[in-house]
Length: 136
Ligand code: 5GP
Ligand code: ZN
Image (cartoon, rainbow, N blue to C red):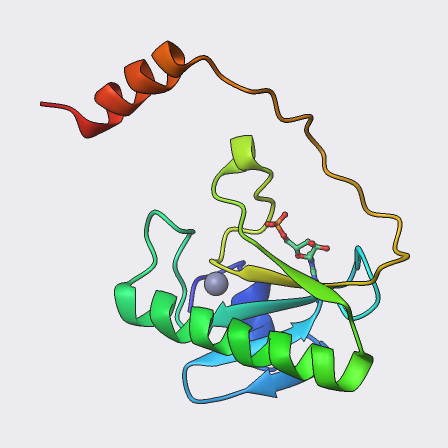
């Protein structure tokens, strides 16, 4: 457990939360500022800062728990879809530094909109960045 980590405190039962699913390795609870009805967060019980640092077992267990929760949200809330979202570092909107997945139920008539306008890239641009990522 990391000191001053609110999600560690939630996992330890030291801070209140609305838990909706749990097992030995993971916990899922309602996001305090939901984007839609039923927006939940899934965390590994072990502390890690984010996607860069989470251990592979915790990542696997948390991903599997997120899938179980998505199925539960479809069954119980009748959502029409789900967004699975992770924020890694402030540049990517991370605000709580304990690895977590957002499981956001979506409804055909909900007001959420894509925060970006995708733009088609030129093949040269894709090739250049792909080469940089591949390295060598
Ligand atoms: P991030 O911005 O790091 O991807 O997501 C952090 C999420 O945690 C936010 O959606 C925020 O609403 C939620 N959150 C922050 N503090 C608390 C809290 O004390 N309890 C709960 N249940 N959620 C929280
Ligand atoms: Zn933590």
